[in-house]
Length: 266
Ligand SMILES: C[S@@+](CC[C@H](N)C(=O)[O-])C[C@H]1O[C@@H](n2cnc3c(N)ncnc32)[C@H](O)[C@@H]1O
Image (cartoon, rainbow, N blue to C red; front, side, top):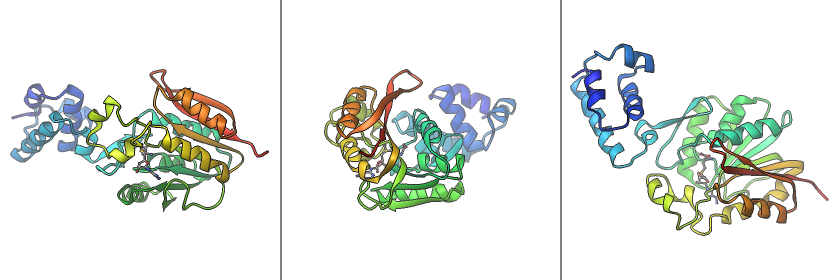
């Protein structure tokens, strides 16, 4: 069987079929099109059919491939890490915009390390620290930093509990999905503790906001990603923790996606 027939007979959407076949064949997108008369070996066909079966059962393509692109680079992902989302790139954009030269910044709940590593690779002047409570996630993040040659300091910590010193920026994409949110059922392959706080979705945000005051330099910024319907509640949490210039930024779909606030020492 050649690639053209395999693409025609695939039970997956065209884009997913293309991504999987590029991976299996080691082809670029252009090669997949220009060389679609290439015959697939029995082994390649078996590999595709196995991926197809798993994808049809709902397993994300990123877990099948073992990586996901974020901010123009491939990050290893495993079932211990959340799959980086495109919206989170906006959080990185904002950190890069706000970070003064040579600033010390920290990423809380780093997962694959995508935020911390992207910040460091875009701005080598930054001193970047990243924490996670999951040893398996920290292992993946450390591998990614090594693969991508990013000098990030990783710490095993429950939010800021095991961290010392002050930061110009604290950034986090914490687990924020409410325990009874219907969307959780569609995310069953990702680690549950990376998705939800098993409560109202705001518990980790309350903790991070409260802890951050002690760890932010004067005029430092806290940025937290949250659900599209949590903007108002998150702004209230920031305001009740004495943050100034509190603002929520919308994502590509015009949905409220992350909130930031400045810490001014009294
Ligand atoms: C939504 S994921 C974000 C992962 C990554 N930063 C990203 O944007 O793709 C949340 C991460 O927070 C971590 N986490 C959950 N509870 C934590 C805690 N108490 N302290 C530190 N990290 C925590 C999870 O292990 C997970 O990696």
